[in-house]
Length: 311
Image (cartoon, rainbow, N blue to C red; front, side, top):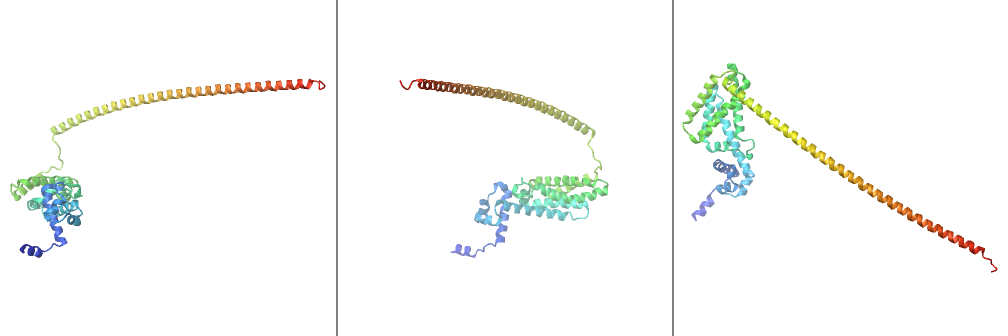
């Protein structure tokens, strides 16, 4: 009786509440098992609903995955954007590093989803695209610093990718390590980035030894490429020769077929000529027989006309 009363008194979720429940459950499952490892059946079973309910809200697993990824990206981007609102460049870097680490600490499941090998269902919501969006915001910070220090601001996008990539990869490592503390990790990240930027060479170049090594490697690569090109050329010549030989053989076969056809036609013509000659000979013989018969008839008629009627 108590169970019946409890089920009757249990409030039914609204559509919005059910959708939010499914998103949170899916987020946990995607973080644990990934997109391919999670099924609609599992999402529905965990939420204690039927599969059609999930399809009704999201159209399928791809739909709920896209919503989860988009939410996590917007959350992280919002935290980074807020951190970059500081006035001093050093403070911006510190707060941005702390923002990323705080997101990892407070939204570990979301970060695991973002750094997984993104499924096609996520559309543009890949970790690479997220890094690019954050880097585009860091570009402005670096461009101003470069201009003040006499460096080329056009290089800011490249350096932004370097800095954001360094922080993001450190964040992936810290996701499982969790030591040292968030603030200490951020301090070390900014120490490397900021002090490296402070002593930045406006016109960096590789050392002479490395340049010589690179030149040697390029020379070897060039020699290898030339050898490959020579092999390709020889291969092409061989193929061309084979093709030429095939064409000659085909031409010879065609010539022989043509000769045979001409011989056949000549034989047919000879047969037709002989047949025509025979037909002409037969016709001549028939005409001769007819002529002889007519001659006999004429001779007989002459003899008959010479006989005396009185006899």
